[in-house]
Image (cartoon, rainbow, N blue to C red; front, side, top):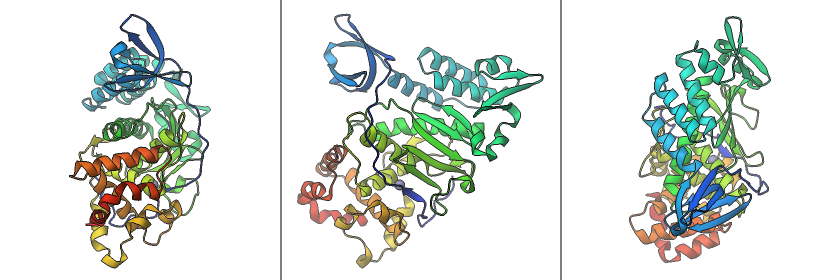
Amino acid sequence: MPARPAQLPPFLVCLAALAPAMAQSAPPRDRVVLVDGKELRGRVVHEDANEVLLRVGTTDKAIARKLVREVHAVAAHHRELLQQWRGSSPEDPVAMLRLARQADEQGLPHEARLFRWYALLQRPDDVELHNALGNRRAGKQWLVALGDKRVPFDRADAMGVDFAAAWRLRSEHFDLRCAAGLRTTLDTLLELEGQYHAFHAAYGDAVRLLELCEPIPVHVYRDRAQMPQQSGAIGAYYKPDEATLFTCCENGRAYALAHEATHALLHHTFGRALRAKGELPAWLDEAWAEHFAGRLQTRVPGKPVLLDRSVQPAHRTTLAQIAADELLTVQRVLNLQQGDFQASTGQASKYAQAWALFTFLCEHDDAAIRATFVDYLRQAAAGKGQSSTFRKLFAPHERLLPDAWR
Ligand SMILES: [Zn+2]
């Protein structure tokens, strides 16, 4: 596992811009069977003990759980498939083909293709696999589609020196262009899908996270030098106005993927989705991204593991090094703007303090404080995350808050 730098370098930024909210209508891939035998079609975007939320077109219908006999939903099938994947080796073509068939049966065509690509890496001459993936034969070679070109399979990874000839593959929730080779493309998509489910598992009880029905575009460049020139040596960012995550390959992995994927998921969920209420305040957006990144153990590519608590040793070190009189006040942290996080002065301490405040409240031993933080997150998701909301909610605990920096 690559060590995190002690100081957070100036590239973990999120370019702020307001994007218009967009209605996510969803094709009816799911089925809900009621106890009276009636069958409803649509997309199940949320399920809990009390209700099933079914999206039909752009309308979400809440159906009381007691009226429901069966639910057949992409979201649940996808979660099961990803669990199977965790216990399977990508070097085992038989296991990959088993997953591909399972994905076929469960109406997950993108994942079915991903597992066939994994199998093809182990069996590059398999005629049936090439045919199933739509590759064309030309003499002794197999040609694969990269952008609008067809290139020999064994040379496809080399084409990525030009981003226009990057691999372009889909998964259920992500649309990836990756110039770092087929294996990295596949691993990155599975990593993102693992993060998607971990994100829902980590925060889905606190804030109502609906199934994402529109894929998030992701660009992974071959290296930092290939990234479009934004500002200096930025290694990863999420652009709300394009609703797209940009990052590059470093040491064989997509750089800062969990941090930026959090921005993408938060924006697609609260800023852009159907009936979304608005953007989160900058401190919360950055703190949440760092909290989630700290909750993932990412030793095996494509298979992130959700931890019980957010582990960020670099932030702890930073906090220990800030002199008491240089710590920002809670009020100042709440009022930090995107530009403050991008400015190089004191950048590491701003991220460390934002992460510490989120982590302190989210993981506090006192259930009343955790519940108050959940209230705040819900208000923020409803577009009311201003510092006045925070101050009002936490007024009874005000004197406790600076303990966050300890
Ligand atoms: Zn960020």
